Amino acid sequence: MDDPLTDVGPRPYSADMTTPDVDEFAEPLPATRRALLRRLALGQVQGRAPSLMGAVVREGRLVWTGSRSSVEGAAPDADTQYRIGSLTKTFVAVLVLRLRDEGLLDLGDPLAKHLDVPEAAGATVAQLLSHTSGLAAEARGPWWERTPGALRPETADIFGERPLIHPAGRRHHYSNPGFALLGALVERLRGAPWGEVLAHEVLEPLGMGRTSLEPRAPHAGGWAVHPWADVLLPEPAEDTGRMGPAGQLWSTVGDLARFAAFLLDGDERVLGAETLAEMRQPAVAPEEGDWDGGYGLGTQLVRHGGRFLYGHTGSMPGFLASLWVSAEDRLAGIALTNTTSGPAIGAIAADLIRIVAEREPRIPEPWRPLTEADPTLLALTGPWYWGPRAHHLRLRADRGLELSPAVGGGRASRFRAEQDGTWTGLDGYYAGETLRVVEGEGGAPAHLDLGTFVFTREPYAPGDAVPGGVDPEGWRPL
Image 1 (cartoon, rainbow, N blue to C red):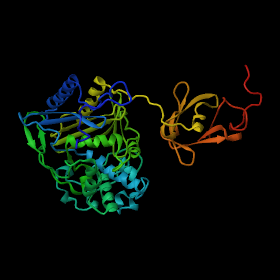
Image 2 (cartoon, rainbow, N blue to C red):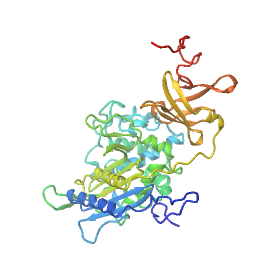
Image 3 (cartoon, one colour):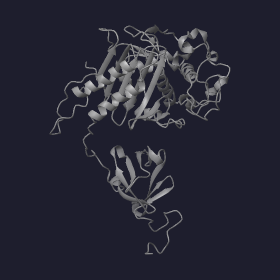
Image 4 (cartoon, rainbow, N blue to C red):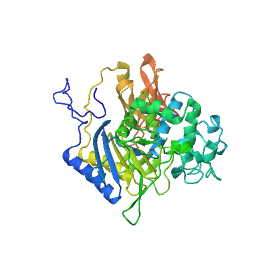
């Protein structure tokens, strides 16, 4: 059976179209492939990397991979494992959100509700996911990334003399121990080691058989490159034990392409698209001086070349990793290298997206009419007025609605139909707010009630619908 992620063969003509569907799954054009390989080559040379691996995912499929190596005839491929460091955190966040979606926890729960960890008792699950718990950035010494996890056998052993650096919820402060606690939370609620839970609930359903806690051949060795000479030093690859949820995983660009496809569209066997969209919503304000970066729930958020990207970067001794997704372009870029420092790994992965997006911009899906339309919903469409401000209400698929200002910018939102005859805002100013249709005589729609805002068919329509009333003399010249 063909692998849906990597099958880039020809697609059939659409039965109801006069032209064939555009093959968005095909590999990039030759000039684009050359530009991608050049970007990878520059990254390997400028970063003095023993090896550098890159990949592009388009419309959920792996369409390009490339590699550069300092050893002739020994270039890595899509099946070569690298350590991915803090990309592990996004996997752990997926496990936590699964627990939330199953009703086993609430993101507002204090950690103390589920775990006895006095050092972080006041922090909520959401604060741990977004690095706003106030916990210290690193675990108790010695340097946890280069030493065995056996030095910190229990959860309490990961904290140093000052486990809490800031008040919980006050500011973004990246915390590796915070994600160690989230891994312990998964273990407590699932009754199994977090790595086993990850394999069963995420890796297996997504077909990520080459992602693991320990390296499996073929895998790259981790190196440090001397800052002032072109010589190498091997780096240790320790099992970090309790700190594993902060950065233990090894993976390949082939497996990470599957994960990128999941982050783009979701998979009901793991997490739905709605929950994944929640993960990439900014949870905290950007740090001062870094207005192009932010953090969601286990995902980093950046702006690069005018594009909004989400994903994560990672580093462990001997390795750097990056995975970015552009939902607007439906592209993902992946970059992996086996050196402690050097290549601008985040920028390389982002540039892989930029190169494809600029040279081969996405072709929009064809417009297609709705397959059905309720006459009562059609009667709602058209102009509505919030006071004197004109808006348009449009009917979308699945009985959804979209409200937007008729002229200029302003408060626009999409709305999901609910079973009780109301609609819930999905985005923008009205996200989460309820839209109701208030009927008049004969059951015809009289006005809309949107979070107490009243929309009428005429600007400041006479009657008692507009809060505060309308002057009985109506509109007049000055």
